[in-house]
Image (cartoon, rainbow, N blue to C red; front, side, top):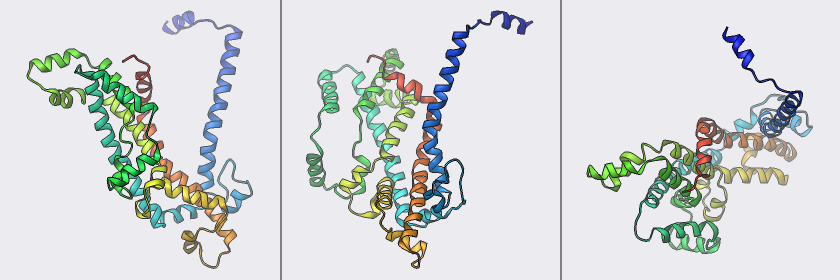
Length: 308
């Protein structure tokens, strides 16, 4: 009976509608393939033989399956150390960024003298900055040059993320809760930690993704401020490996693993495999983070479209 009702209430689609749906499905399927194929190619290249990669045989499936690239990556001390550094910079830096962003966004939702000035001050920095050289001179004067502390606290707050968090608090958390908390004798700190933060799980998750991905992919800061290889993040070391492989020079750091008797050309071919393995290892945490946090993306993106 229910099935008959459903069939009766089903909207009849015209041939033009079905044709449009078919074209739409084909188009988005093509776009999906275009996006996913490069990722799939990198993955199969990381477990294929060097000769198969250079000859163009590894296009759809791994050819001459080999894990020598991953063995080289995980046996290289600098790469392992840089991986640990990136985890430290990302976790600690993201935690500090979220804390400061949430505090500042909450403050901007309250009414106080000079609120417009501070809001303008924040927004002004989105469009105008002092530039790289003044920032470099200031950080060096503060004693932060070539330190891990700088890698954690630099670029602590994104004004765009701050505005998104402010909009979320002002639109999603009723002001009546603040008035009730004040009546009960709660101050700003009590209200922030006991009411705002517990009700802001969605925006905190979104900020975690935004800040975490930005910090994990940051390689330029270390190029400017870090001179000690032991403090380099993974992306900077990966950039060095990829640039060396593309330049066609021998990788001295990997020659010991490949054997001194190998010719340079063979080492370069194997370095190409190492390059793909480095990409897989470096993007793995970001992909996992996106998959875990994807349910918060839609709400997080639409927050920025609301007026605050």
